Length: 355
Ligand code: NAD
Image (spheres, helix red, strand yellow):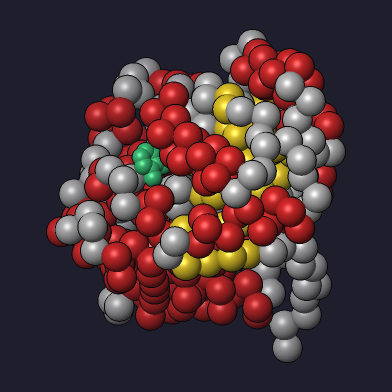
């Protein structure tokens, strides 16, 4: 028998192709009169598309704030809040990846404004009550239902422009949530089903996207998988892999999705001896007899970077990262021992095969 506690988050999810057309109805359903549209500078054309759609149906917006930035820096949040106040915004529409969604959450945290989120990467933030924020270079994370979006509109069409490299690493970022959900201390059978299905969908779809970025069926499968994996992240606790990525990203300012992609097989290999059931489920989802090998095969197909040294981590950072990783460690199925963790980081830094 496996005892568990199951705790779901409220979620309204609209999924499909062309689903952005349902945005006006969702705005009306929430009673919003002047939502502020959020994006990054790179996605301002997506924000403009949203603004034009609303205005074509006579829905006023509070315009755009297009300066969302990775890791939700406090000064950017303050600027966005000032714009929201000045324009009397009564809600936010965040269109983009984890950075833009993070900004919407930061505004909701401080104002309780409703959020409509249109995710365009596979990172999964839209399904979690987690918000990470940065102040003076220090990132802190908190979990509160206040930041859960009221509505998530998944529109596959917006993911077609996600570059192939970022599609691959963002997809593996999603897989990482499911991997750690499968051996989570707070896991449960429902999350296991979502995690296995999420990994299966992404592992099938991502190589097809690398061959053809406009493959709509693969894009749809990948976004579906990302939703499931993001849901897992929002429901159960994560372990050493997420701790390592948090530490590495924060200490060396490494790119989020690349870091997850490089570290995942090594973190999984570290935990493998202690989690045979999770390994069997993952192996099945990856279509391989062995989960670590299955992940290695997938990463080779995706042509992603394999070493942290390739994304800007200095070699002398290995010891610093090991020290940080063992401090305030998250619960992990295998005890966190400094030497073992240092070896995980060293291998990931060098880009050696995981084993
Ligand atoms: P991102 O949001 O930083 O996006 C990377 C770049 O890709 C940006 O320039 C963005 O505008 C662009 N982009 C995104 N989608 C695009 C598309 N469809 N077409 C063209 N360009 C597109 O990347 P990310 O990996 O999604 O998010 C990373 C951030 O999210 C990190 O700060 C991470 O900590 C956070 N995150 C938070 C959670 C959570 O639960 N709180 C979960 C996952 C990630």
